[in-house]
Length: 430
Image (cartoon, rainbow, N blue to C red; front, side, top):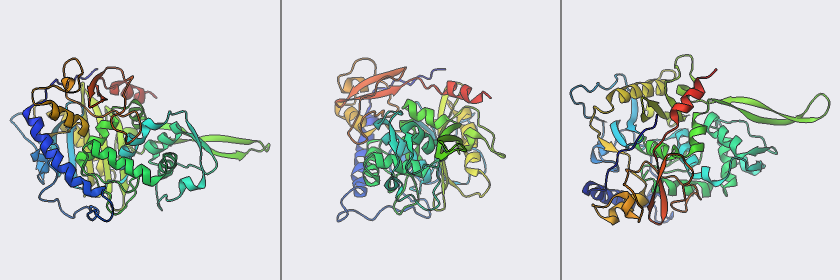
């Protein structure tokens, strides 16, 4: 079933929000300033800060749980122990409820969503790369690995499967090497985060491995996932349950060199299931993570009855098996029951360049008018870069059901048709 975005013109609220975002952007420059001028790297705080980013609305800047429970709205699930969480409508961008939405915490491998959203457009999946020893340098001790071997050749498609399914830091480092190295990749990730207005986020490692100063928030991870889900390949990788991954070339009994493969399975337990967590009906991705410093983190997207929701849960304090998935499932259940009944407490903002173009066009202009485009304006979903990771708004083409709006000299794509039901049916087959 196709989901349709509401059509809303730019309003005075958008202009006010733009001013607030601009202030946040200025504050965020300390994260990318030269070392001599930069402020100390951000570090996760032990308790929620009293004041956080106002991106997305003032309610989201407040600590604690934010929700508008009107008569007839289901109450929030009990036993939510996560330090931070958010429930949002993936298409309209409405934040239905949140808890410490902008609390900067260690993201673990959920940061790979930003890595993928930044680098996926750079190569066709058929591109091949022979792995050198230098490609794997710097992979952290105890990292999750998919099994990339030095001297073997892999397609980019293989490597992305390793990133999404097994959270393979080895695959991340190989793709980073193809992109010019870890430092360049991290720089591009931070630039892309700023463009998305994910201003709580600062990447230090491309794979989410614990590093001083590496932080994100439930709000930002949801924003990043929403952007990534505009890309067909991102959706397909994130929704894949199992796949074959190339093995190591070895001699068989006849002395002939052969290369087999082995099965890898997605570590997202709402997608693949586990002994104490069933597959969540309608789930279609996105990414999980777990490190000593970050604890368990997870961002998921699910579709039910034409409604698409995003839920992010960071670091549940309840130490039970698969707790991050259990709390995510409860929040999904609440979100689907509350959608259309609960008044939003904030919104997922569009990319910075679109926000600035809307503000410059004036409060009476629609997004379609801001850059000379035609047709009715639509509330943007997320950026859809198809060019280089840091070269502004790339040209997004070829996604069925998309509405193209010309803005700021580039192309901004609003994907109005989410192929999630098809992915769900594909997974349900034996």
